[in-house]
Amino acid sequence: MINIYEVNETNNMIEHEKLDVRTITLGISLLDCAGGSLEEVNDRIYRKITSLAGNLVATGQQIEQDFGIPIVNKRISVTPISLVGGSACKCPEDFVSIAKTLDRAAKEVGVNFIGGYSALVSKGMTQADRNLIESIPQALAQTERVCSSVNVGSTKTGLNMDAVNLMGTIVKRTAEATAQSDSLGCAKLVVFCNAPDDNPFMAGAFHGVTEADAVINVGVSGPGVVKVALEKVRGADFEVLCETIKRTAFKITRVGQLVAQEASRRMGIPFGIIDLSLAPTPAVGDSVAEILEEIGLERVGAPGTTAALAMLNDQVKKGGVMASSYVGGLSGAFIPVSEDQGMIDAVSVGALTIEKLEAMTCVCSVGLDMIAIPGDTPASTISGIIADEAAIGMVNQKTTAVRLIPVIGKGVGETAQFGGLLGYAPIIPVNTFSCEAFVTRGGRIPAPIHSFKN
Image 1 (cartoon, rainbow, N blue to C red):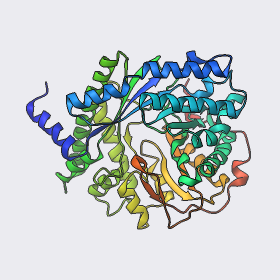
Image 2 (image 1 turned 30 degrees about the horizontal axis):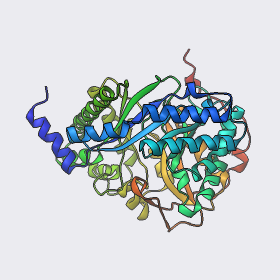
Image 3 (image 1 turned 45 degrees about the vertical axis):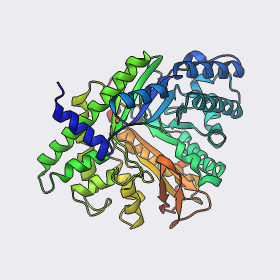
Image 4 (image 1 turned 60 degrees about the vertical axis):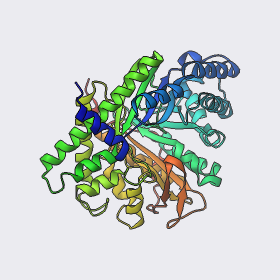
């Protein structure tokens, strides 16, 4: 039973500590939209999305009013489009037409992002996969709400280095195609290793092929709530610290569970998972970096940062798992530089480098996220960074991702402006020594020995 103290406590989290439900994401399978002609595929996709998601935004708004819980985003994820459009799309431009259909459907139902313009190529690429990947720069330049992702490796299959090499070029081309807006297209493009099928968070969300026809996934966030809780136990030992984080994560997850169940009931669509992720925003007090500094670091990036983040991530997961039987997605702590004021400040004073961020991704929920780099960074260097991050995920049996933004026309010391939840970012220097001979070898890096468990 929920007592009056817990009700008041939750109200305080919402009103003063920036607790929110970051997103209700409606996952929609488009497998039954495949067809022989491109016109037929586009028509089926538009009709299915608009019919299933027509009342998504209104339902979210009604839940906000009824329960007083802010729901920041209402979003859609769909089946990887390389699978849906494979039979009808004969060239990259054909896939771009599907991207425009997704964008039109997203605008019609009122969601801010639609994810799933994606390809899964961890072991090899079909011609449809390659066509979709080649289309990404044009697709992201000509749409507003479409998000794209490519999975280039997994613990079971190893790393598809042909795809890794190609993605460096695609990221660079996407940056050039959206250069007029500080290369914003790259903020909507994620390169994964071990991508989960049920991730509700953009830009990497897609509706996995193992999922039901439609499902409600909810992403909850609360960095501000965790920071306030830790302020109350300053100077306490790690046992108290960990217990405080777990208890707080439990309470945050229960809010998400309530919203997910209500959205499921009202829309008549099954509930999938709760993703409890400490996903920051540019707002002051809504920062993962500030949590780590409250734990005892002068600045994020100082010695001890990776250990502090590992502890935070683990306790968040433990608290969330106790609160819901269906915790999934990424769940843990995100460290996107442009979306976290504390991260931005740490980069600006030189405390945080891309190398330290890479070390931190070994123990956080995702990877190198929303990092602005010089616009003249070679595509091969971007591929090398993707390969490094994917290797961390492959060997450690975890999801890792890269969302790099080479800002065309800007260099170290300048700032890229993305706006809204995407924030702004100081441009970080990258290692200028070449890895081109490595990333262009071709083929696949084999899966690690511990992947063989059958």
